Image (cartoon, rainbow, N blue to C red; front, side):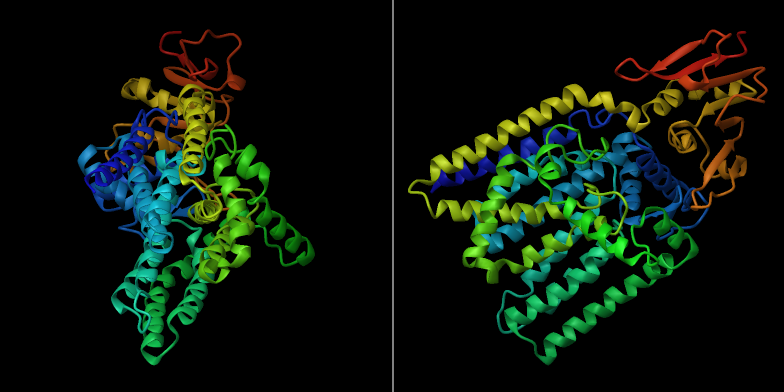
Length: 520
């Protein structure tokens, strides 16, 4: 018995150390820099912490306006909590993603253990720790990991509420819906997934424990709670800003119904393609490292085995998880970009369920489990090791995609901006102002007085033209360069003027040419 306990602690300790090391090591510098979404989250979190208002001056909002869209509050307020301890630093923006990923994995384990037992559940944690799809998002300050954590927590407490076959545990049932509501305010995908998932949950409840007046009362009260939480969501969705945002990213065009149906179907099935899952993954380097596919090959093999296992007779027990897998790509299907690892992240825990069912089926076919388990563990760890080594050694080549140059501008020169009449910064990588707000030493109680805004575009995208003496420019034509500091892109390089400095990306390519016109 003691040996089994020691083995159990060794396994969990090893997985925990693997998770923490691969998530925390060099988290500030790999990915190479904060992307504008991360910087926006950091700026709004710090502004809330210091002033109680977002960057636009709105007090404690439920939706944060940014770049023509609206960011959701859960991750931002969490970052504000981290900043209260760590300060306005990159690590305070990214650490919550590690925490929320760990929570998502924990509740996934509890769900797997409930339906498949402890051993397969532990294997599920092993897979989630090493799955490429989840890895990069667990190191970056995006809201999606918070949404996944609350959705899996809600699913766990929903299943927990059905443990007694004769009745519904109302406390756990209500708690499940509270977590589902938090998912609605964590990431936008769950505003598409939950309206479809909730009927699945209630059908599962009916099939599992039947329906009585007490159970119907629990459903109606929980739906009332969700409905109250949906009111601000619906108000935003049907506002001019919300409709403009969907116009920019949506794939639905009611004037071309046939084409829309084709596009929706194509977008949906792309998320299950071998190319996406097993070979190349998401083409966006901020969502995938471009090394291999989104899943481990072992997971794909076991997942296919899991489909066979379900088809042979376990559908009745596992249809809920299969249904949740099938609805998880819906947020991707209704938008223009597909496949899309970020919007489709909810697929991961249910793809792992398929892999675990495949493992269960294979175990039932072999005489000795150890060789099979050993092959699965070694194969998975070997592929993840290659993936992780590539990430550590080669991922910095994608620094331009992370707008690396802006962080270098403000880290290296931000303290000297007050010495110049004008500071001109090229906006060729987009939204440089948000990096100035994050890295600059600005007074958050008063900086809004010094901002000049550009008019929103037709799609509702808003930009900042200048903050004090710092101007964000598209070109150098017509500018007063006397006593100015200029950060120009390669295309804006001045032919007849030597640059004072060159800010480079990690691979040596030019991010900015620097011109100090006080020295000319």
